[in-house]
Structures are given as structure tokens and as C-alpha cells.
Image (tube, rainbow, N blue to C red):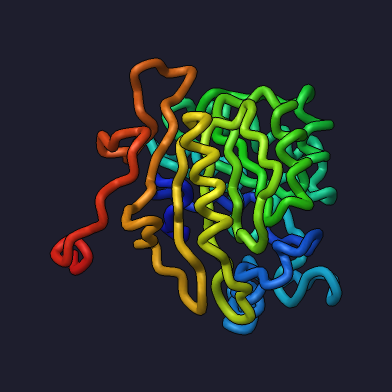
Length: 274
């Protein structure tokens, strides 16, 4: 399992599904697809099914890994899981019974916190009435530019405890952004080969909209050839996390008592070295 950071808490990826297909410009330089090709070449057993040569690639064909479906049940300690590395939970080729099984595992593990982010928000909205939506689940949509703000309308139709806007990778401004019903926002610039540059003005506009609506804002990085997670905007780190509406008085895991409505000071040289 790969350890990484989503909107704040350190997470482990849970991959009962692997593989995906490009559906919008934010997918054009998919790092996961490039990694899948390398993992296939290295002989990794989970990355041996090829996807369509136009929309996917080697080792990145959509595959159900049923042996991983119940993995979170084996973790006794509270853990953060992310369903999103190398997959989209609402891919059209994931059968509904299997998708429902994933949600049932989430509901059976209230000690854990789960996160997912989809670009297939319309399918999510259509299937939402048929799925359980436990309060230990962050539900996110990825919006790369203003052309895809309708994904937020789909997200608002979902009875999620935490609704999350992931502007990742942000490749254009989000003019007309409406944060009604949104609980938290994260921003990340595109990184890796062929990355498209992000503009500070786009990020500042999103940050200011979050401040105006008292929505937590988390800047995960400016992107580039390699992303640096120590990303400053106007001289500050912005790593705000939401309070959980279903668990009054409790911050979500790993917030470390941070103030919700102020950015953190820039790290000292000692902190950077550590």
C-alpha cells in the first residue's frame, strides 16, 4: 500500500478497483497511468491488464480486485483510506453490485475514515439513492477548470457527510465557483512530465471564495516537474480541514489542533529540514 497525503490526513490507498480511462482535460497527463505502465513492465501482478490505447494505456485497464474488497476490515486501529489512486470509483464499467459492496465495507468500518474523488459525478448522483452514505466518508469531485463546475451540482445531490471539491490538477480559473453545500476545498497544480502551469491568481480567487464562505482551504502544492507539498500562498501555508458535522466537537484525524480559519505561518528552516 502507498502512503501519501490527500487533503490533510496521511492516508493509505485502498484499491479494490484499478485502472481508468481519460474523460476530460484534467486526465491528459495522468501520473497514475504513467506509473501503471512502469509497474506492468516491472511485473507487478496488479497491473497486467491493458486499457484502451486511446483513453488508457498499458497496465491501466479497469480491473476488479475482489481479493482487496474487504481489506479495511483487517485494520483494527483507526485508519485513513483513499480510493482514488489509479481508479475512479464511479467508472461506468464498475458493476453496481460491486460498487455497493465497497460502500458496505465503508459503512462496516466506522472506526476508519475514507476519502474518494471522482470525475464521473453524474453517475455518482444517479446512483446515490441506491447507496449507503456513512458519516466516515469524504465524497469529492475533481474540477480542473470552470468548464466542469457542473460536477459540484452533482455532488450537492449526494447525501454525504463531507463534500469535498478537489481542484486537482487546477489548469484554469474556476470563474463562477459556487461553494453552497461544499465542506472543504483542496488545490493542487499539475505535476510530472508535460505539466501545465498553474497561476497564483486562480488559487488566490479560490482561497478568497473559501474565506468568504468559511469553507476550509488546503493548498497541496503548485505542481511542476515534481510537486513540493510545502506550498506558500501570500507567505503562508494553507492547510485547513473541516470539522465533521456528524461528530460534534471532533476534528478529523491528524488536524493537530490547527486553527480552522487561518493559514499556518511559513515553516522555519528547522521545520523544513525536519
